[in-house]
Image (cartoon, rainbow over all chains, first blue to last red; front, side):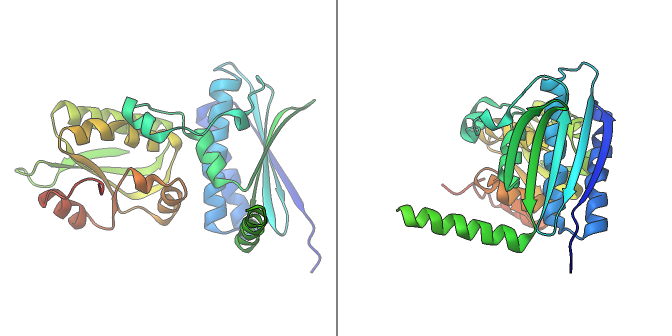
Length: 158
Length: 121
């Protein structure tokens, strides 16, 4: 069957009151394109974390917009989260030392860690449209194949 | 929505039932409830996540931020009834190194009553 990729978009004010709209956008994709609960749940969480970071760090509480755009392909789902705030490359944030966090009773600081753990691919770049965070997750059998390929390519080096 | 209650009037075990999405607002509410229990020196705490579909980073970090003080006082914070979605994230993030989960309230209460250490040595 010929598969045509599809695109959807939503624009919301950069405010925590609109996080539920962003999550609903992701759930709608599940309903329409039969992605697994695992994939959609991961996106719900990561979109929420990324948007919270944009509100807190990129716009720093000032007014702005967040655009969420979904690219639906046969083997994967890619979601672009776009803002016009400060450039904030979350890929440069190091994974937290959880033992240290527990030791000092730190609250927060796990959002980027969660995105990194749950997504298959993360990219971040700046365009005329704004800062773009690109998150991709493969449908389950594809994700497994990808992990296996990575494992064998790493084994070849050892 | 966050509700706290005891198992029985004489039991030292506190149960917190959380509902809906555990995002920023709900997590901060939970934070206050946990602080209240710690202030009352109630260190045996069970958090029931049966009605929670989603725990954000804020929620997980609230759990992690409390366990040191709770365990230093001989208690523990145990999570029960995780939904599939929440359990999946718990596994991927490898929080099993830090927080113990149970399938039922009875299992969690039994560990408290038998003084089972919070985590294996």
